[in-house]
Length: 84
Length: 163
Figure (cartoon, each protein chain N blue to C red):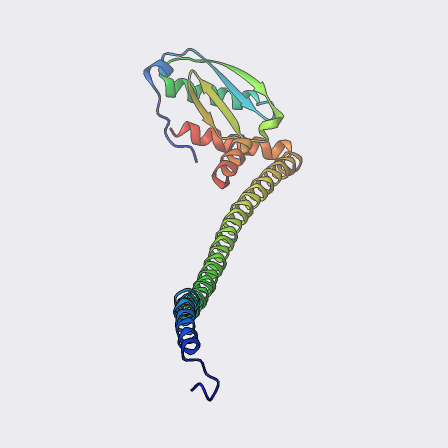
């Protein structure tokens, strides 16, 4: 479940971002992600897609200082941090 | 007297001679002897008196010595008794200090053991969590196929769209 992000003015002014996934996204997935980010930022954002198997699953989107992390590795790291 | 063969003149002369001898003896022999005897008697008396005095002094000294010995014995006994009491008190104090020190050492050792135990438990928990995390990541990475990966991504994209 993704909660509505707290975006700063500086984040909203960013025109570039990065999407990391464990497997390569399909064209449709890329289009959906891009459209969602454009809508969220209020303007077109050029996204760079990167495949990183170490994130295990899910996706991590970074625009400026704002990061949306839904990766399994991120969730496992969060769980580990809570346990420690 | 003449019939008896006694010459009165001679008798008188002998009487006079005897008297003279008596007087001379008295003057030059008896008196010094008497004086010597008197002096000797006085010396003996003085000696006896001195002896008596010495005996009395000796008795006094003996009594004083006995009293001193008695006092010294009592003092020695008191000192010994006090020394015993002091030794007993010191012994008690040493034992009490030893107990206190031993308790302090035990308490410190327990505290250190507890700290060590806590540290070991924390380290063990940390290592267990680290191991579980690594193993889970390996397991998830090997279990999730491409279809499941895309399903997961699409699920997140759907949530992203709803923001």
